[in-house]
Length: 143
Image (cartoon, rainbow, N blue to C red; front, side):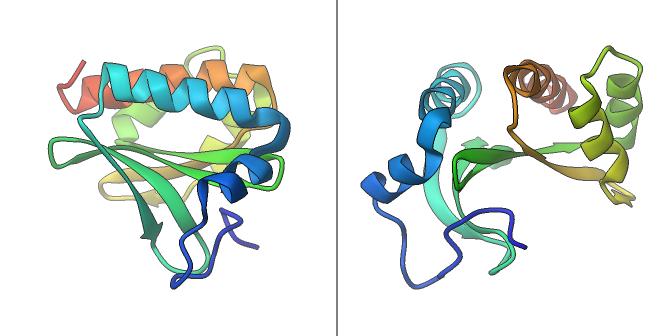
């Protein structure tokens, strides 16, 4: 199963296709993207990320550092948040909702931290995603 729903590298999705795929979570996507653009990111572009398992994503950067990737899915979207192991352990000490906590715990630990893909299933997920992104930006010295 892929992270995003647009997995054909040679065919970038149109804005209409993205909006249609997001469904009821369209406004949440727009609000999160706008927040990231206004608060942290100075560059955004649509990129085919990491191969067919992931697909097309809205890639947001601050300078040369990744802020986040947002992957449209059918009826929602997935948010990528990369955290150092120290940031992961600090996040796990907070009151995360069970879904986000489980996603973090299931993420593979690498020496540089964890790459966490959070499928947005609820408004509580969005609250936790905002907190994790803030933690990431502080970790990078950008907040």
